Image (cartoon, rainbow, N blue to C red; front, top):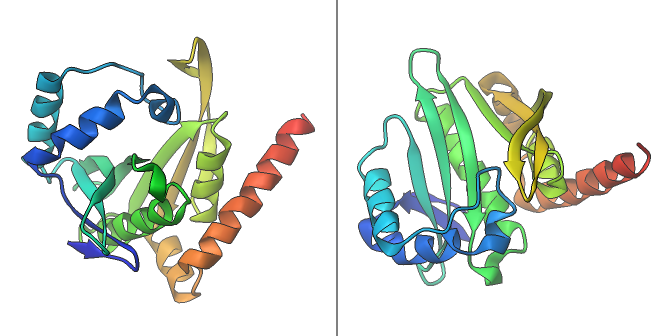
Length: 207
C-alpha cells in the first residue's frame, strides 16, 4: 500500500471490476483519456481486471482509495516497464468518483506512483503523453516538472478526428532535485496546475 494524505494506492483486486466497468462505460469520462472509447461487457471487464491483478512486473495497475472510508474512487497505471533500460510509461489516471474530481486525489495519486517508480522500482526515466486538446492533462504534467519532448502529429483518432499527442518525460535526477527543493507539496502543486492551465489556454488563444 502507498499512502498519501487523503488517498492510498493498492493493487487492483478481482472484485474491483464493477467500478472499473462503470467507469469504462462512462463516455464523458473516457473522452478525457488518450485511449479509444470502447463500450465493454461485464465479462470483458472481469477478464481485463483479472489480467491486471496478476501482473506487477511489466505493468502496474493500482486502485486509488480514500483514507477516510477505504472506498475506491479511481485507478492509476504504469506500463511498458523496462527493467533493463529503467524506463516506464505513466499510462494514465482515472478518477471515476465525481466527489473526488477536485484535483486532490488526481495529484496525490500521481505523486505516490512516481515516487514508487523512481525509489522502489529503480526506474530512471518515466514518460507520459496526452492529447494536445486536453489542457488540464498538459498542465498537470508540466506542474509535475515533466519536460515536453515533442508532438506526435495526428496520431490518435478520437472524438471524430485525428488528434496531436504531446510527449513528456521526467528523469529520476530531476525528480529527486525537485523533491529536495520541496516542489512536490500537494497544495502548491494544485496551484501550479491551474497556473499552467491558464497559461496554456492563453497560448492557444494567441495561436
